[in-house]
Amino acid sequence: MSVTLLWVGPSRSEFANGFRLLDSFQDGTHSKKCVCRNRGMLFNCMGKKGWKQTGNRGSFSTDLRHLYVGGSGFETGSQFPVIPSAVATPAVEMAVSSEEKVYNVILKQAALVKKQVRSTGDLDVKPEIVVPGTLGLLSEAYDRCGEVCAEYAKTFYLGTSLMTPERQRAIWAIYVWCRRTDELVDGPNALHITPTALDRWETRLEDLFKGRPFDMLDAALSDTVAKFPVDIQPFKDMIEGMRMDLKKSRYKNFDELYLYCYYVAGTVSLMSVPVMGIAPDSQATIESVYGAALALGIANQLTNILRDVGEDARRGRIYLPQDELALAGLSDDDIFAGKVTDKWRNFMKKQIKRARMFFNKAEKGVVELSPASRWPVWASLLLYQQILDEIEANDYDNFTKRAYVNKVKKFAALPIAYAKSLIAPSRTPPLSKPQFEK
Image 1 (cartoon, rainbow, N blue to C red):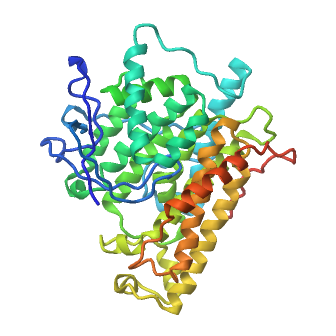
Image 2: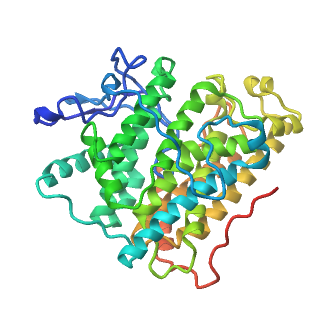
Image 3: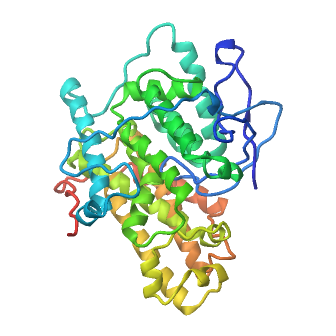
């Protein structure tokens, strides 16, 4: 089901052209109302689904006619090179795996947190109060973000209720930016979105990080990244994932698919951990906590992919490793035919096993988060694991049947997630650094 997201516009004229959510444009020149699907953000708590809301409100849209083109390079500073494009030079691709590239981003994020610890002596980040005179505007901006999160990510929104107000509002701001970005390419107007439009969106992101937000919703995120040790790289990488969606519909192996999953989902985890915070009594390394959060993002996106095989195939997309399909005796034609065979069942069993492996990695890191932030993460993890159970219950028919967790099971998972959120960090040796295969 498709929708147009609507809202009540503010009265202040200086924001009359801002505070918008659905990005509507054709090559940045003609504004059209965009009706979109979305993948689901904030540890992918929502998943791919359609949505609709109507009411006596004004329309959300981000008019990219006001954006301008500008470039910026990806920062370096680690043993692993960051490759900004999904297609790197063959020589580099042979030497550096996708996991290594992504781990470079983790190292940068961890360095920011360590810098915060050195300057404040506190791992549990406590943001400072905003500049006087802007509090009212920022409060309204954060409230708008909260309304969007409450409407379209109900379970996760409920989970954020235990967070401190500062963390809660910051998570809402990140959620809204991710949703806006996702909607640029994941809707009926996707055919009208060009790489140039995404370049403009990235320039707007850079301005936002420099304290020059374009609209109210940008202002909320700009305030968030000024308060918390959040690096711009995961945000840039998410935009790179949108570029991949414009030009790529097949993935030759899991290394390519892993990078895509990081771009569109793992990035959200890395954006969120600095806000959620790490427990003061955690014995784990900062890098390992980020690694576990990344694993949850990867696991959730792999689950999205396995759930939506039929839906994606009808759009001409196959988010499954081509080499593994071939080894299983399957081809694109088998996917488009949509028949559940023994070959398909065996293939799906292996894919589900891999997704569960990433969930298991993620579980080891959730307990290391700040206590008030664990509940929504545990809820996401448990609910997404149940989607894999539903795929199995449907006899691996993800061509014609959509695996979903009903409301009863969702509500039943919440107290379980809450109980798990009370578990203190482990006193065993810290989570280890990822080991990469050569």
